[in-house]
Image (cartoon, rainbow, N blue to C red; front, side):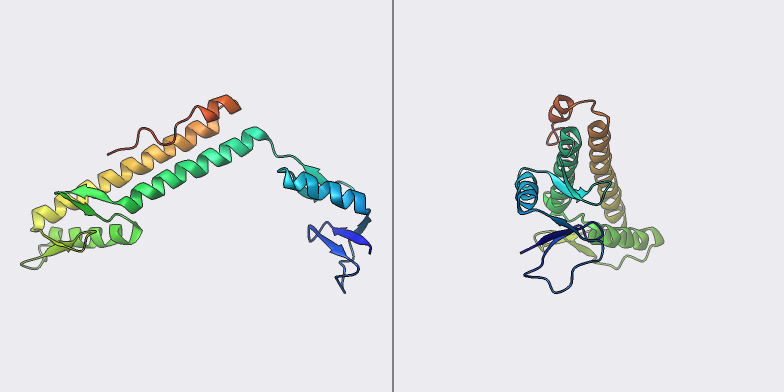
Length: 180
């Protein structure tokens, strides 16, 4: 069996398995193939070298740490959005769709068209009676809270990007400092 690597497809092809092999494919030895797969299993990325032959490139540990820390910060942000915002002893949903509905409710309150007996459905599906002033206050609080979450997330991303070395990235606690 002959093994090929295609730089355009960034993939391997075996003559015994593939009827069609890209025209830019280069033949590699079984030893080269095994070494590339071993390097990939240890975190390297296989990509075409200048001559089109496959090479294993180890990612920069600082960039890997930055990407991991940014993903962890995003997960923290997403978890806080999903958890909602405490409001009058209940939890207000603040995901993107809920934020749109909150703004629509505020617009009705601002226009004086909020129906009599209006109530907002909270995360536990119980109604929270609100008059116009209450709807406006809830919308303002939600906007302020979501902005504070975003601002903290952005500050973490900026700190991670500015970290000069691996130790500095690892010292950033993405779980701390979030608004309550």
